[in-house]
Image (cartoon, rainbow, N blue to C red; front, side, top):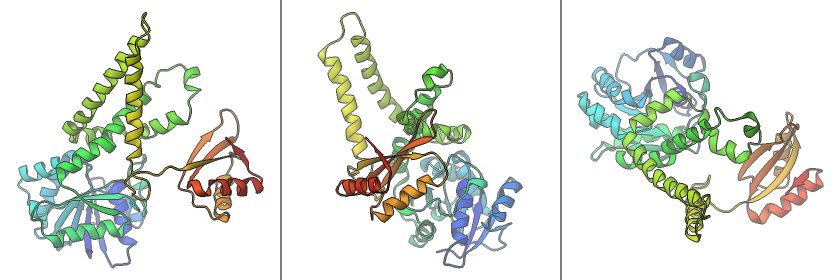
Length: 364
């Protein structure tokens, strides 16, 4: 675990890392620097550290700037601090490494990092000390990287409550293109269909649309930088998606045509939807299980007012049932909501009985 850290870039991620270091059981001196003095001052006011630069080399310099400039910024600060270990939080890894080498930086002192957490709120004001708890923190050391330097970065991740995962830079970039960057593109493009839709059409939106478009609320400028920095890998995923969309479009065109299509067109649609089932089942659950388990849903109607959700959770706790996940759907034009509690199948009936006995109205 480092005893002195300089955080370069006090946005959402940089400030959140700094807050977790300051909240550590270890004695860590944290320095803050940002090109925008208001950002570093705000982070300092939140208790993230001291604005300024250490006179001697800190154990670790954490660079939290946009991916397109991460490599050059690391190289710049390496010239100032000749012995420090460097890491970053960029969401791509191959590009910054190439930029570091092009700028004459020292790759032996650089251990790439990517905490896979974020919020729709950017800047230090959105920072949270627990932002990384139970989240994957990818670490991308190079072959031959000094293990002590890797341990420093791993210590920061573990201190923040994250789960360190070791990957090589190229594998990392392929993985995030599939699981993060392409989903952002798809979510945003679907949400864009609503921009000029008739209000009467948007009014019938359900929970499915809210789920699919939630991340479309993210910062467009930030995501432009992220996608551009991983362009080749994102394009590969979108090319595969394009092929599947073309198959779906062809089948629908045939079915909507004069001849009504064929059984083969229906089979194509069913196959694509089934592949979605297969892929969704491979998404790890919150415990990191390789295959997400099947949960039972206990749907409960509550009043849409402060404190009701907390009381429902407390009632589940009194029934000694752990809620694995939760979904909330608000009724159109009514101050009520339907809360879907996802629980292990073996406890679903007991929870239903307990909530009904407590006066809750069950749905479904």
